[in-house]
Image (cartoon, helix red, strand yellow):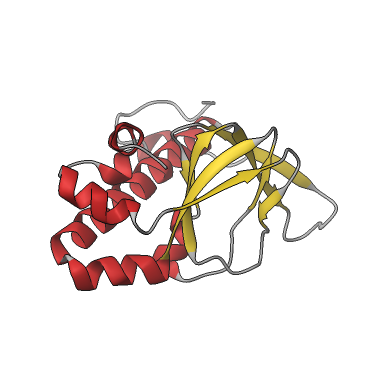
Length: 169
């Protein structure tokens, strides 16, 4: 069973008491997965958030316009999580998640989050706020990567708030 030390290291469980962690642990499902296993497939539904206990996964995004083209967006390791976006926006998976080695994960389903909300609304609220913070951090990171990527369009120098030249990034 997952211990509180692991949970305390993960940002989604930040600010929770020992009793709240005990409640959450009753809903966590552990799974050991071999290498090269697709855990989530782009375009398919997902109703859970997954936490990596051991191992790593690749986040792979397939092009919408060229189905033969895909790219590894990032690699996640122990302590990271995936599947959060689908819990918030109830959309299909934005990318596939594939184990790169034997990986141990724990999962918390949307249904179980609802059960937590019925048992302890404060715990549920903290989980959702922490989830939103994680998604926000990832969005900021993606924004930074996009800002640093060289592209064909630049803003005129007068449009830059700091007056910087638009001759390149």
